Length: 248
Ligand code: 13P
Image 1 (spheres, helix red, strand yellow):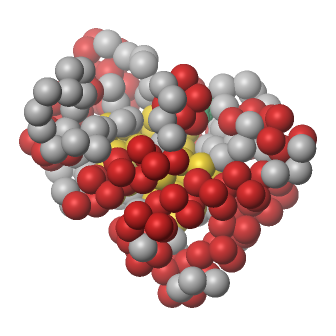
Image 2 (cartoon, helix red, strand yellow):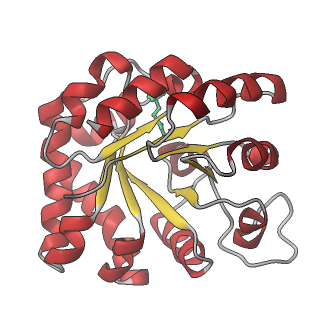
């Protein structure tokens, strides 16, 4: 059986005091359940100090594709490793749409993360316009193909894929379990055509307005293996309930 994994993406939220309270609540409640929190860069040291030895791993929300050098404002994979990161989100839709990250740049970040021993959480997903014009599968396939071309299908055995329909992110409008399952099955089928073993083991998370109230029916879908959680990951009781629903 595939493992299930829920990751929180805090986005640009938090403070030292807020994070301390949130992590203190999560630690005992998630004891024995694998989970991840992806925090803003300045709080990686805090996550490391608070979470070391717990079942909660931590990671970043972005990383440079460059190893080092004159890249003002960028953060490298080795810097993430210095703070004990295990995961890094690459290709989040906000990075793609607000900061112009292309499929090729995202693939470079994915390659850099894996080369450093980090597990990339590769985000894919279509906009509302793309869904309405019937190109959801084509968009998701293109986003996956960029990574497969750069790193090979086998690389997915050391990655997590997160399907996040852009129209469901932060809108309160979640994909129905059937809509999400259909795209998850498409992703697994596409990879299975290249390597059935890799596809079978691949953790595919769903993200987009996941809450405690809708987590159970999403997580019950056969190809949904966890979630990438934005807003609800900032509320301890919500995030714990989602992690527990996935672990069932
Ligand atoms: P919300 O859960 O706030 O919709 O965000 C989803 C997301 O973008 C996680 O990466």
